[in-house]
Amino acid sequence: MHIDLIIESERVFTGTGGTAGPGAVAVSGDRIAAVGPRDDVRALAREARDGGAAPEVRDFGEALVVPGFHDSHLHFFHSAVYSSPLAAMFLGESEADCVARMRAFAAGRADGWLLAQGWREYRWDPPLLPSKRSLDEAFPTRPVALYSGDAHTLWLNSCALRELGLARDSVPPAGGSYDRDENGELTGIVREAAAMELMPKIMGAFTDAEVTSAYRGFLAQLAENGVTSVCDLSLMAHPGLDFIRDDVHAALLASGELTARVHLFPTLLEDMGRFEGMRERYTGPLLQAPGFKQFFDGVSSQHTAWVTEPYANARAADDCGRPTVDPEAMRSLVLAAAAKGYPVRIHTIGDAAIHAALDIFEEARATYGALPEGRRNCLEHLENFLPEDLERLRALQVVAAVQPPHMTLDPGGPERDLGPERVPFMWPFRTLLDRNAVLAFGTDSPVVGVNSMDVLYSAVTRQDPATHEPAGGWLPKERIGMAEALRAYTQGSAAAAGRRRELGTLEAGMLADVTVLDRNLLACAPEDIQKTRVLATFTGGRCVFER
Image (cartoon, rainbow, N blue to C red):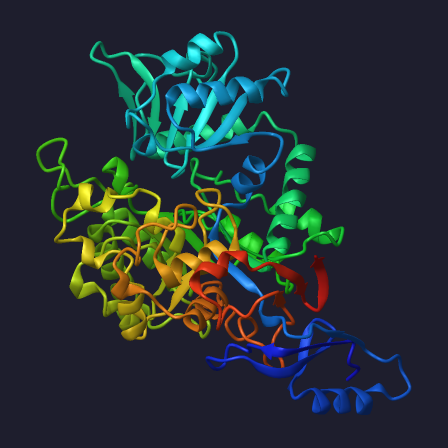
């Protein structure tokens, strides 16, 4: 066994314990050959050399060496497009401010659709929903689509409505809706499944070459943030089209440009043929299709998350949101996947959605037994628990795939929408770890960016990465330690991808995914976490980023 690379540092965090110490990581091919004291690893390299070339030795001094970060939940297509010159990305301060930003963006795109993402009306002053009127005044003859920051709502102008074939008498698909004014006219706000159904028509304006270029740019962002592996989850459009562009990933793999491991989770449908084709085609270490994704509800801020009791600020009688997929249909889909041993990841934000999904997973386990070794069902987001469901995640071996920066996206929103009684059971990271549940960290990009330090900062402080509020953290008793956060961002996410046996720790036999940081996160003050920079990123022993 020839040693190709040795990574050394005074601070190596393998993930098998809670501290970092002096050590070295020996890499052979794309896997770790040994981890241990520098002298022992160098001696192993000399013994294995047998007349061949000496290994490259990278001594990073006192930098922190950790397993490569793994974003357990993002939407690759949208992340790539919205972070590229093809679209704009902003929160905006008001409806008028967003329109002004679109005018500026339009100056650089001569024709075609104008696309942006990021607006959140509840963060504006005043916090009022926008409408097509302001966009119509600025863009009377050009289609404009602004996707909300939570990726559940579209804001369209009249030209876009016409292009998309929407009119006063249009009927939304199941699980979606069109907002209308007091006269029954479309306002330009399209929600949930109706918004997702329209996105392919909008995104179809971009060529494959443009999309591929955007993918390259997003891969570079991931590498710069020390992210060596991701789960690309479907954002359902309509049956058979969910924005999982495996063709683009495969082309980049063939050209040697796939610098992060990509795990594809297309939409769970009755016809599993597309997934099974991916599963057969993509069996290498960089590109795989481990399982399915489905949606059970929406988001709390829009009252589309499915909750057991009405919202505290109910907009109508029995305002509990609703399931986006009929529970019996979801049950049939998940049981069919379980019968074949395929894991499923379900978007569940409200406590009713979480409870119903756990019931389905419990029935699947009782009927077909545990999934094959290494595979795990997952629930995505899990913002609002029923207390009795906290223990069930561990019992059912369901991974909690969460996104720490989401906690503070809507300051005061949980108290406003759900009331003080339910708030203590929101994003309960400490409680879940204490009950031996598996946490997997991600970002839900483009909902928030793939900034790895923001993920870790939010997890250990429970404060907003931008404002650093609230002081002391939101529900501070649910804070977790940095070592725990690093494990959730590496081992936990590897479990969500079904690859815990080869990803997530620095140990012999594991794939050589390594991130090197310029500061010791395990010892630095919370206010210094976001000052940390990635010095180098290695995917399978290949250096894909170096500062």
